[in-house]
Image (cartoon, rainbow, N blue to C red; front, side, top):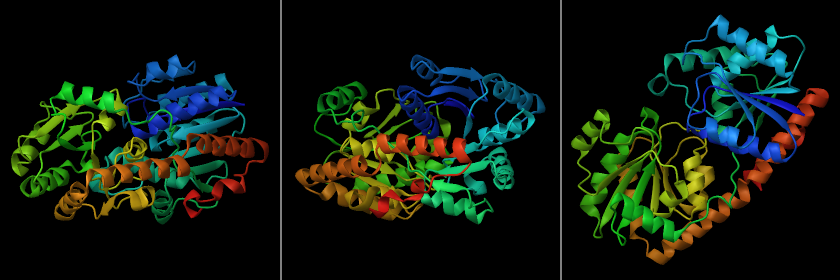
Amino acid sequence: MRVLHVITGLNAGGAESILLALSNNLRMAGFEQRIVSLLDEGPLTARVRSNGIECVHLGQSRGRPSAAGFRAMAREIEEYQPDIIHGWMYHACLYATIASGLATGMRPLLWSIHHAHLGFSHNSISTLVAAAACGLLSHSTKVHIAYCAESSRRAHSARGYADARATFIPNGYDAALFVRNPVAGRLFRQRVGIPEHATVIGMGGRYDPIKDHATFLEACSIVRRAASEKVVFMLFGEGIDGTNKELAALIERYQPGSELVLAGRLEDMVAAYSALDILVSSSRGEAFPNLICEAMLCEVPCVATDVGDCRTIIGETGYIVPPGAAGLLGNAMINALSLPRKAREELGLSARRRISERYSAEEFLARHISIYAGLVTNGHLPTQTLTDPNAR
């Protein structure tokens, strides 16, 4: 089977990372694939190609769809002649759907949607316009949707997205790739200047309003005043460095203390997770944060806001608080700190088991293969993909 993946760009984001892993597993399962990125080359381009998967970049301007771009996408479809087109994120789904109408032949379309929050406060105008356009196109009988979170499915249904050809496929992770490594964790601490015996609370992710770094930093100031032990707070991700003036202003405002490390964008995530005692997500609207699942596989208990499917992901292995509530977030962090180290370690082991059992890369791959086969054979989603794994 020949699959054409279409994605907005190949930067180091959640959906991009999931595509990278899925495409490599599909390759090993014998699928032919090509990935088309609407933008120029990104950090993940080389990794895609190193996996032996062809990658094409259309060089379009971010957030500015064009007739020339739609025609270029249609030419890719004509040239590659895929059995199925798989779009990732709104702009790519929009391009793939319109371009498939310009190309000859009818091919099923699968959209992967990794978004749950469609408010004006956390999205660009171009994203909201693309999402609205996709809502109209979702009623086409050739369009099928795979949501990564049940919360995402509900949010889009409320916005008028078609439900008849939609399913739920939670993200899947290779437990063998995310294994806590104490040696790597110690070396990472040395590299960024964290004392070996300090307790480390980390928050990861790019600098973006939806991540709500302000609430995290305010919560850190609460923890700093209450904690009896030495606690280091670590921020990491794209844009998390000394050149970020907005972040510097937030640090100045909330005064989380001198024990704050800005680690920037990281490559070795296992080492970073292994350096943590607790991971915090103060997100205001993500659907299915990869960071939480990866940290849990590395035996890190998590404190997260009640957005997307975070409550279902974490279960009884961590703490859930309302978004935007710095006081409650700080108290949850204090409660996690107050656990004896042995109890925290046991919580981390439970977290790893939960992700391994519920969100495996093997099941994620199997569900996609089943969907591809069903759509190519008879144009329908197979019924077995509709099962919520969390109901087990």
